[in-house]
Image: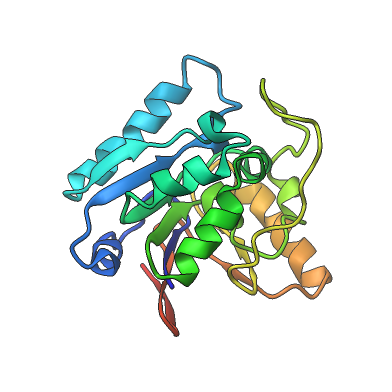
Length: 213
């Protein structure tokens, strides 16, 4: 399993991500955490991610999970075309719904088990891999429901990593103050977690895992 879980964007050591790719260049960008953004803001946000990845010499393409709601087999076929699945931040509860509706949670878990792709991302994009989104509601609004989504709140994460992750911890980020509340929740409920400052990332390759940046 290969993971690059950044607090914010590519972090301070993006070369650690390119190492994991082992020469692969094709990147699927999943930006559905931004589906709740104003219509005129989402394209600009996504383009920034595409440009950053292109700056690393990669070949990024957005894969909009809304096009695959109820079409899990088609999504799996699409994602198998890529070397990297890169999931941007935004609202983690909106993104969790998109993962479930499209079957991305099952597909990505399967691809990671096969070591067929690298999973990378930041903020909401890394929360998906945890056991639960409990505590994230102190940062993101779980009742944010964009058009085409249902009102249900999905609390269970994918369980790819056995701990919670608190991004933007004590950083110069608009969510940093709320992250303090989330960390308090995790401590009070005896939930193992890793707090990341912006610039840091969790890097996992096989059984080896470290925090860089």
